[in-house]
Length: 166
Image 1: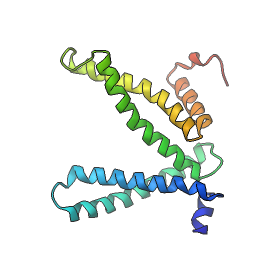
Image 2: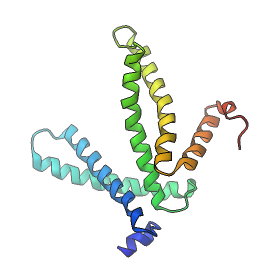
Image 3: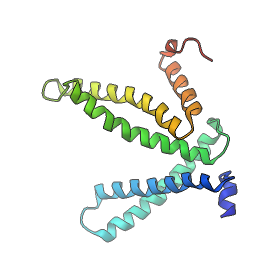
Image 4: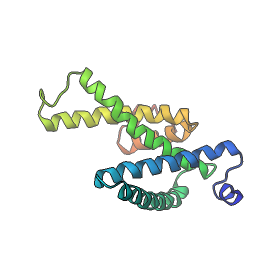
């Protein structure tokens, strides 16, 4: 356990919640993905879930090594926290976007499907940005995500909205 703590720069036991949540999310995602491909056999679902979990874990650890140099985080375990925020935000933006679309009266029936999907993606994108900051704040990573948003806005050529912040 000490090796694991040292590898992830974990100084306090409460910080272990993030690797645990990360593994739970990874296994759950693997299970949901395996349900897309395996319908009948529970044994094959379990095997495919285990295989997908290992593949996703290896891919995630690969991403950590690449992003560790790029992201300015104090501890390695914070990377897990950032990934959790991205995952929750992506899912939440879909759940928030759907009712907003319905509230605005936008449906596939009253709009051309391409226009509907463009609006759906645009509204989801707007709420994604808001939720990213909110959920980042809840997880104690507001400064990281605010810097992330500012960089993204500058790359999208809408950095003028930032009032010349640096």
